[in-house]
Image (cartoon, rainbow, N blue to C red):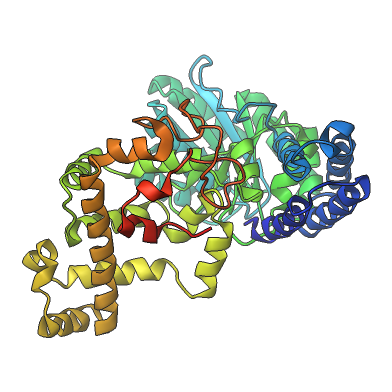
Length: 499
């Protein structure tokens, strides 16, 4: 979503980093570029102006311009201000969770414009409350205007395994809200989600109806659902809703789209309320907690390792990971292991998602797109391995020319595609054997400057954690410790990037 903004900022900061010393004019020129980038991303003008003023004031100080790495210092200031703009605080992640610890039933009211994704977001939130918080939720549709809106929520409730309030024809929103609260008390429900009708912020009658529902239900949380594709008008929408009901937070939908991201960057500054969740897809589990610091780092191309680790923890099965680790320790790696890894990559969001979350991978992601390499590659590779027999996957040496032709025909690919998969497996298998020779993963960690375990990774407390000599290129000081390349076996040296 933030690709265009991220590219503009990346190019600007690359030029700053390339200079040994910075003059005040250099910083002001860079800030002008940043201002244009923000306005092109549809950030509200007052928000963009305020952001640039704050950054410029800090960046033209003596301590920055005369420091050893002035370019890096300016990037850090921009990063910190971007976090603050998105609702984070100094040194903290900035995520504001839902308030669910009030006296049950806790009422969450969803408000927003027509077509902003309230009904789907209600079902996603119900599923998240049931699975992550372990609470009993119930959803009620107050939308009597849109045809089949109540039926839609009932269908989504079945899919999300969350109860919905039975539909009574002809009931009005205020009466439905009262019935939902009574039903929740009788059924010992912890959280009631009220999905209100979409309304234009200029429609006074519908705004008054929303106010009446809020006074009857006395909600603990009033969440404004905003489509990320909304540009400058998001400011007016947020303002008019916050004037009518006491908003407690914002949910941004369609964050997986190709919008310019202005609504996301303007929302916190305009409403003063935190962005609590972001919808990142159409499926019911595609709702993520919004972390200002992580989003800011992703925009600036610094990656988002924490989210990557969390995603891995959610999607990778522990038994599979342990089995693979044991096989790697023995130097074993067959096509079944490769297939398992590729499936895990797909379940974590595919190549594009992973590249976007890894530090310094912005340029690699662009190169992948330019070469036409996308997630279909993973699907094709899986199809190739699925066309093999179990014996062939366990022992790829069996694959002679005749068998390769059969596999290619079965998977709808070419023989050269089958050869590429086999070559990839050979290289990974060779690397596993080299790791075994070095004494397994502990030996590798020790060689990478960690002294054993994970000490050499950033923030893990070991030597090299703050970034030292032999860093991975593009990581801007966030190194993985001092690596003595000469100690690595020749095959592994080939895989490492050349200086």
